[in-house]
Length: 251
Image 1: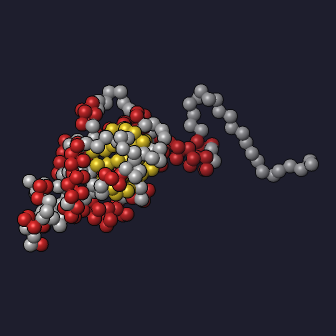
Image 2 (image 1 turned 30 degrees about the vertical axis):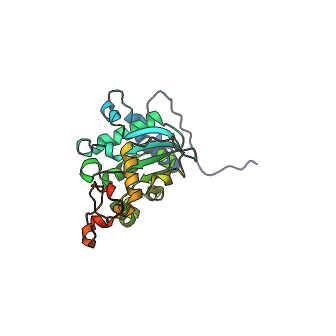
Image 3 (image 1 turned 135 degrees about the horizontal axis):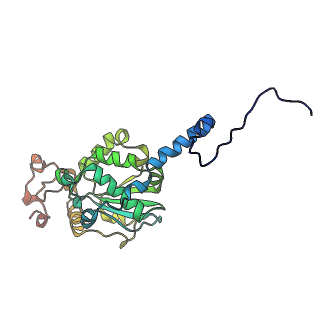
């Protein structure tokens, strides 16, 4: 009592309407916190909800649609690869469209992606792994956290090999471990009730072919149907069509 501190201190009072930047008067920790908040705001979804941005042409393609929910309660975003015209849509516009759809139609709550890779052709429907990685990295952290799982339907041989060999290095760890490969639709129903997600007819037909000729998906049988990502190497094994019992699928 009666003792005094030898350290000097001062109080700076700033009027709120002077427009003075108060950050120089903040502690180092406070400044770092404010800078982090500004960086997060740079990724705010509002910048992708411009009223003058017209995505009606992409909406008509229906390659990116919000549908039902999986058995864990995650809302479903259905992505149909074949519907996406990769050669005519830039990566920047694709990014803005994805951000726009998520922010306007699914602003909160957990969600999952059901990506249907059936009959995707690299030159026609695939934007490239680099662009997909870039779009994911640009997502706000809040959206990344809300994405619980990515169901990869009909991945194909080369997709599996690419992700198995390069996935851990090329994709964010958070995304890599969220991918669940679904080789047949029957396995998708273990996680999603039938009717919750619309299955295009060509996806069902592709699934039927793979069910009757499963080796086609791995490039071992002849590919007369031109299925995606399948190296046509069946004849190198010396097999003939007359030896197969499922010849109706060869025509």
